[in-house]
Amino acid sequence: MESAAKKIRQEYQDEEDRISSLPNELVHKILSFTDAKEAVRTSVLSKRWKPIWLTLPFLNFGIYTNCSFHKTYMFLRHVLLNRDHHSNVYQLNLSVSDKFCVKVPNERSLLKRFIEYAISHSVENLGIRLAYNNYKPFKLSTFSSKSLRKLTLQLVLDDESVESDCWDLPVLTTLHLKADPNDCPDLPYSCLTCLPALTTLCLEDWDFTSYFSFTFSKLTTLCLSGPDRLPETVWNFPCLLSLELAVDLPRNINHVLSTFVNLQNLTIVLREMFWKPDLFISCPQLLNLNLTICSSVPPTYSIAVLAPKLCSFTSSGIFSITFGVIQLQNVNIKLQDWFQDMKREDREKYYLRFTNMLLGFGSAKNISFDSDSIEVLSAISDFLCKCSFSIL
Image 1 (cartoon, rainbow, N blue to C red):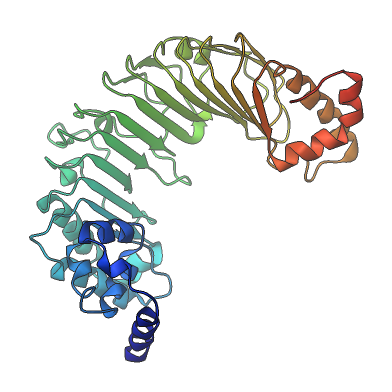
Image 2 (image 1 turned 90 degrees about the vertical axis):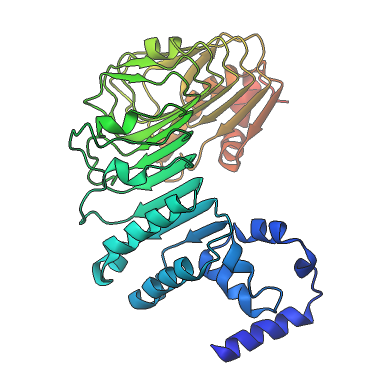
């Protein structure tokens, strides 16, 4: 260890020392993009760097796969105990692997200490990701804080309906909850209550089938993703500006989209190809639309967009689409390896569908293509010439 530190110091001294002349605030910002272990290692560079990690306002603890379980445990404990407790800490992130938790003793007490440390030091951004489920579920009240503004959790939450157990997060604006994709558990109802300041909500890999309504009066950004279908629920988001759906869409999706009168950004990942009726996107304030087909087979239904203010459209895949727009500003077309393993006879069939799709973008001011799209354009260049279709 000593020789390694000496080598680092020598390499550092051989270079012109410009970073050390920067103020601590800027050095902290630079180190916020690194793991806590790398940030602590900078203490060997010089006396100037020795105390820097003690006052870092951003600490990110990753999954240390190359270290023994005991060393990782001791490192986490060392940083939490020896950090300058009088300096502010704004962000704490912890990712824990299943192997780590199986073999390290008292991991529950370590996690509890980590959460308590965050709350007692008025952390504003807290993230905890546990890649295992064999532990007692966490109660929502565990994370009660008057300072938390962003909370990211990948862990099992207590789904027992207890009125006394609820969030106490009066200033929380961003909540990201991720479940185990192999389990896809029910999302506890209490997770979507007692959040008066919430503006951004991301729910990933949860089962939403028991939800009959979604209501948030201040929500501006909503992201839903998971393997299951959304039920036909009542959506009440009067302030929603951005929506991302990477789930099997509910059958009333056309009506749902029409209720978002203020929506400006919409991303939809279409996965089921055959059962849906035509998709109709009618959003009067929509500016940016992103549609992705997660299948090598184009859908049999058509997509119509009525969005008079639409400026930018990005497509990933091949589908039939029409626009009720006078003129699109920007169109980005991606095929993302659609034709990589496809037979020649299938390629020719879908080349024609791709051509028909391009015809709908003839009025766009700017059209960009990824490399796969350009390869397909080259393959069908003769056909495009016959159609007298030019792309500027």
